[in-house]
Image 1 (cartoon, rainbow, N blue to C red):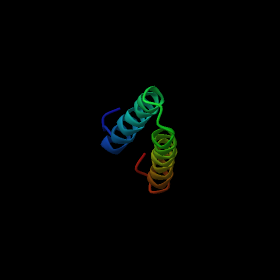
Image 2: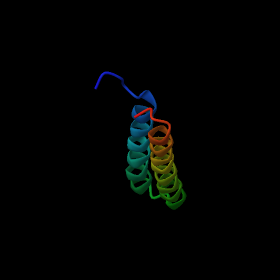
Image 3: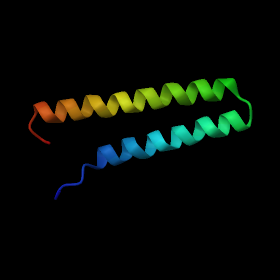
Image 4: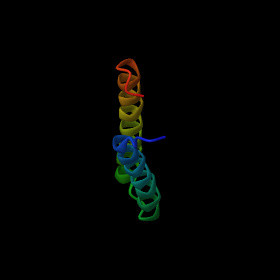
Length: 61
C-alpha cells in the first residue's frame, strides 16, 4: 500500500463527522438536524462508492 488515496480519507472523515452530528442533533432534540445528517451520510458514502467504481474502471485502484 504505497499510495494513499486522500479522497477516501476525506470521505471517511466527513462520514464520521456527520455520524457525530446525528448524535449531537439527537442530544439537542433537533429532528431537522438528524434528518440532514442522515441524508449527508448517505450522500457521502454514495460518493465514495461512486468514486471507487470510477477509479476501478480507470485502473487507478
